[in-house]
Length: 140
Image 1: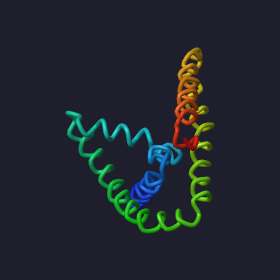
Image 2 (image 1 turned 90 degrees about the vertical axis):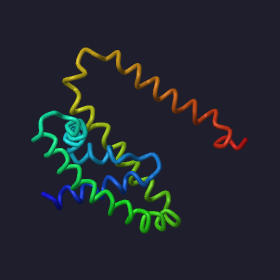
Image 3 (image 1 turned 180 degrees about the horizontal axis):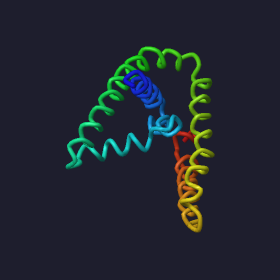
């Protein structure tokens, strides 16, 4: 299981090295986001077994993350210099691909709570506004 956690950590680090992409997105797509968050919570647990399991899981993930970060610095930065739009498009695709997964997983939880979509619209409006009124992006 070490190899799996190691690879997951590497993939999270590579995603973290791309502006606007989160290792959490990769954790979600790969299906271990809940375990990751629960492990972070269990570090402070009074249950010694839960704490031990959480530390072991996060340590394996962390070793992979460390190596993935180093590889990202060495590899992805050089690729960014020549293929910025290709790499950015891959990660944008991962983010957009995660949206239907989130909707499917949270469909039951969201039933009858559609007023929360107002926060989604608020977030979209905020991103649009920040981008639209940013003088650097507008050339001013």
